[in-house]
Image 1 (cartoon, rainbow, N blue to C red):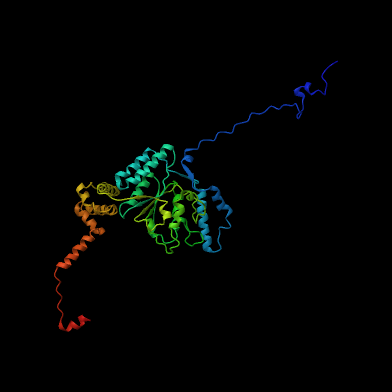
Image 2 (cartoon, rainbow, N blue to C red):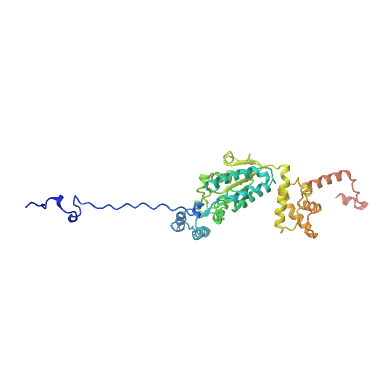
Length: 399
C-alpha cells in the first residue's frame, strides 16, 4: 500500500516538525518603530545649560581629595570653592538659564528708547532689526558685542541700563579704569590666591535666571594694569568671541560656563589705545548729541529724577529746559535731585531758575564763570591797603 514514507520531508505535517528543521518557518514579528522624539518643552526651547552637570559632579566627588590644599589658607579657599560647587548642585534651577525670546511687547519697549535716548537711534535700530528677525524665526535674540564711541557725558551708560530694562535682564557695569591686574574682575582668582573668588562674569551668570545679561564695559580703553604685559584686555579676546565664550573658564569655579549669550556693550571716548584684535570684535557706533535731541533727553532725565522722588514736582516750562541745553546728560541727571531739594525746602512743588542755579553751584558747574569773573575782579579792583606796621615791629615783620 502506497503511502507517505517517514523519510519524505515534504509529506510531514508542519505542526510536527521540530525546531531547526530546514523546512520549519518561524513567523516574523513586526518591527516596532522607535518612538518619535518629544518636542522640547517651552523651557528647553528658550534656554541653555549654563554648565555641564557631569563636570560639576566630577568636581564635587572625584576631586575631593586633590582639591584640599596643604596649608590652612589653601584648605579654607578649597572649602569655599567646594561650597560654591555644592550650591550649584543644590540649586533648584539646575544648570538651566533662559534666553531672550523677542515678542511684540519687547520690540515696543526697545522702540520706545528713541523717545528717551534719541542720540542712540542708530543702535536702537540695529537691535530692532535683530529682534524682529529673531521673532520671525522663533529664535532667541543674539547680539554681537558693540562699542558706543563718543565724548564723556552723552549718556552711554544710561542707555545701556535702559536697554537692559527693556530686555528685562540683569545688568553689570565693569569700570575698566579701576582694573589694575590681568583681569580678575572677569575671570576670578584661582584658589591658590588668598583673595580667591569667582569673577564678576561667573557671579552674574550663576545668580541670574538669564543666560543673556547685559554687561557694560565702561571706558574700555582706560585700563591701567600694574604690569603692562598682563592687561585685562587679553581676557576679552575669548569673552567677545562667541565660539570661545561657549566654554568660558572662571579660574575659581574651574567649570566651563556658557558665556556666549551675554550681551556686551562697551563705551569709549577713543579707540586708538585698543589693539586691533579687540576693535575687530566690536561693532562701533559713534554717538553725538544734536541740538534738536537735547529737549527730549532733558525731559526724560527730569521724568526719571521726578519718579525717583515720588513724582512730587510739576514739569518745568520748555524755556527752562532750553536754558540747560549746554549741560551734558550726566550733569543733568545729578542736577535735578539737588534742585528738587532746594524747591522742597521752600515748600514748593515746582522748580525755579534759582533752584537750578543753586544746584549748579553745588555741582560746581558754574566754576568756569566764577573763575573768569574772579580774575576780572582782581585785574580791575584796586589793591587792598596794607595794615600799618609800627617801627619796632618792622624787622619782625620782615622775618
